[in-house]
Image (cartoon, rainbow, N blue to C red):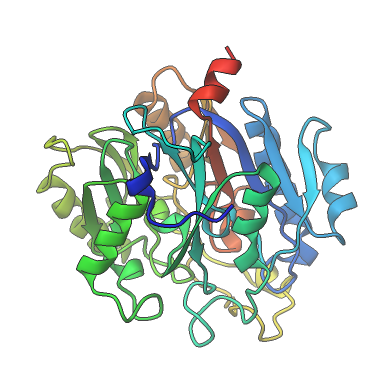
Amino acid sequence: MELQGKPIDCGFYMPAEWEPHAQCWIGWPERPDNWRDHAVPGQRAFARVASAISKFEPVTVCASAAQWNNARSQLPEHIRVIKMNMNDSWFRDTAPTFVIRSSSSNKDNLGSEIAGIDWTFNSYGGIDGGCYNDWSDDMLIAKKILEIEKIPRFPHSMVLEGGSIHVDGEGTCLTTEECLLNKNRNPGLTKLQIEDELKAYLGVEKVIWLPRGLFGDDDTDGHIDNMCCFARPGVVLLSCTDDESDPHYERYMEALSVLKNTVDAKGRKLEIIKLHVPGPLHLTDKEADGLKQVGEAKVRIPGGRIAASYVNFYIANGAIIAPQFGDKKWDEEALHTLSLAFPGYQIVGIEGAREIALGGGNIHCITQQQPATHSLTQSSK
């Protein structure tokens, strides 16, 4: 069912990621020009992520008809695997952004406590600057998921990927100017107009704009989910480095300055928890040689900086599913920091997350949480 108007007018808002989930959606990688060695190492990493999350909440993995048997064979039986065409497997950006109705909203005859926003997707910049030339299947993913789940849909003409926004569920949204104000997204909209749309569709009252995202995150033009996220209302995690010679240092200091000098929608000064980036990590000759680079997807050059960040984790029901990059010092430090930031949560490190980073993102980028509605939460008790 397609809904008219804007979510805020119907009492909807985007809940924080730590609120209860009904399930998690994940795509299945296969394109050989973005996933090395015919995506075999990447698929193993995706399977580890899906299996880890499935211990805490239901998981649905979507795979093409050609890959369905392969995906099914690599995943535990309790994970649902369905057929769905896609151009690539970044469900944070192509699956719907789910919104739920606030308990204080006026009830009407809508008949649903959950809906999904179907943003416009242009492969991170369109034909002249995006990551791949054909994104026609990706544009249908959100609609298909909402039809499968029989969830109402709010279509939106604005270009936006889910990885470019983070909310605290209490009226505040984090994003970056580098991404949302990029001329390859919505050149006809001003910063104020984009902010107004975020407020109307996410149900937020304040947008905090960081200047830029993680250094090296050229695929997404600086998505917020590699740079900064909420741990809980009033508390953010920030990708940092203590190496002043690292090009990311300048971006980190810019973001730190903004965060220190702002308040959230409730007027709280933000507590900032620093998560040091790994490495730096770079694409090896062997990894680049494993790609079938034929000009249809963004070219990966040996020696290029990998956009690796520990902020790119998934909050499951009672657990943090966190990337591990093979950098012993910072991997261990990240798990320790996350354990302090999320007391009461089980911290699960995913070995081999470098394989996901090679494709241009990480655990948060390949997942999309479907929040539990009040009725679902009640029925599960």
